[in-house]
Length: 291
Length: 232
Image 1: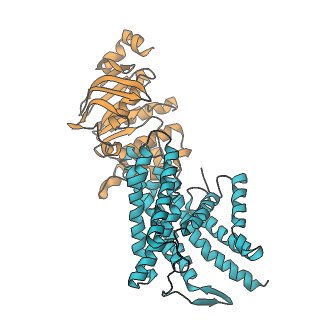
Image 2: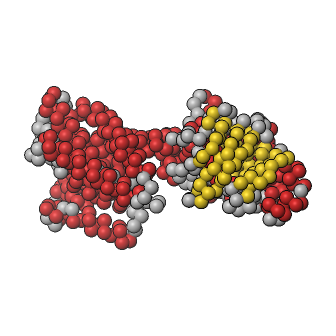
Image 3: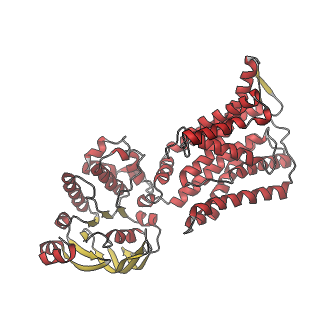
């Protein structure tokens, strides 16, 4: 095995890791804010991928052009999910935690069923785009342009989330996260903050979905796998930590790629779950978690 | 300015307030005193929209009863709650600035000057996390954060709790200055003597009912009252 192969694998892992990080960031944002694990997170990713595929099929528009519209659509969907489902789940008087879990879990099943019903369970793919079928030669390491673009866009989206977290709205998010009952004392409507948090989390996963659709197959079940990786990433990085999600995403990307290279491609997830177990045993709050 | 008529409220299944009527006029400091568990905190929470109530609660003629808590704050009714409820991991500056979050307009951070004039210590600790402050400083920050919402009516729940005696006087002196700037104050306190010293009028609360009301000086002077209702 040569250094070139390692470099090739590492770059592939890095780019995938950036996408993992963005998906995880959306999950982490919602969890950090509300202590709710969104079990429908992968299905939001799936919806964004189908949205990209369907619009591309119908209009021939390049997926890159769909980045902003799909992000906005997912944002709106996130806000709607909060208002229509989560706000109600929050107001129940008994077993609130369970109700929240079942609500997002039920939503996941509903969305998956909807996709299956509408699009069938065949694998679809966006076969032509500005980026498709090209590679860039980086000193002997060949990088497919869709993956490269996806990595860069994920990084930019991550940057945008970090910028948002430094704004006054970001401070209000943080305050709501620290004491959701106290924000009313300063005139903040926590429902609004929660809804915007869901919107942002869904938009993040929407951006990841569009970029993923340029090189990954689309099926009703595609979200499940990414969601699982996102849970591992969030647990590793620390629940609620944006920076932790980035570091953990990159780490998971590398571990996955190296496991596939060194052990066996079909066992590529073994490494990351081993890390997950290790985190649970030795550092349950994750690398950068504060909870 | 504020009027409560026959207000009852339950808190964690217990009837904490029963038929409470009370009035606060513009520019007053009104103290609510009473023993632990008399319903003082529930009274403030009822006004702030944090517990469900029966009866009438009006602020400047507008009913507060069905308004969500954040709307009540935006009307100019601000509460410094028991336990202060700061945002512990945010800086002192962020805590203060967030107080103006719901305000719009260029001058929304203007109360900062007032806060720093009242509590110069806060200006020295702007970048510190709120959780690293001492009890007294946290109380100052909580009052400062409430002032940032530009209230016309300020409610304070046990501002002396968990604070060094020397600082209690500072904080109560600040409350008087806040009133002198035109903010009406409703003060809940267990420290009877200090509270009555700065208040204009007072209500004595016992097991959820108002058993006595009058000028603060009269209540402070009445030994029988003190023995009977306040257990001191």
